[in-house]
Image (tube, rainbow, N blue to C red; front, side, top):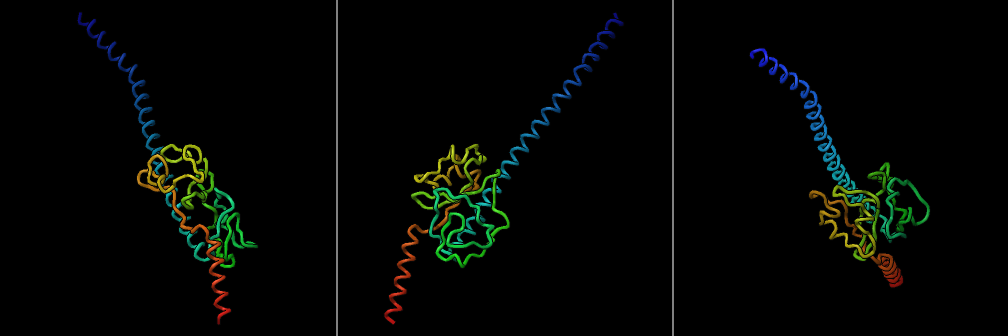
Length: 203
């Protein structure tokens, strides 16, 4: 009887030992999965942080260009920002951006044009003004894809989208920026030049 009890205990121990490697592997797999999830989450958060910082930097540079060169407008409704590393150019256009005073260009403003997920940022023209956004095809931290889930046509209200967690806001970080370029600037510039020439005639 005693020997049978000992054999049963031994069998239980042996059975436990056979399950121990499986349990260890499962535990290890769970820990790896948790680490991967945390890493993906951290990478996504860092990516959105980088987008927010780059958008802010581009907005500052574009305001500087407008102050010096007076941006007249853009040929496209969505203009890729691929001209910030340009040193010199001929005429009044750099890329598809028209300038009133191209001689005041101070480029290059950056050594390379900023990109995210291999796509350039863009300037979007809407009925409510100009905005800087990540390029079409960029997937944001909320899973939305720019240009697909977030439609950026002339009627887009990007100012409102910048306040939405389902669009250009991620955990308090704004992923787009308004570009305060006055519409009709060409007409204003022509009017100013006309006034100046009239004053010259008077004097």
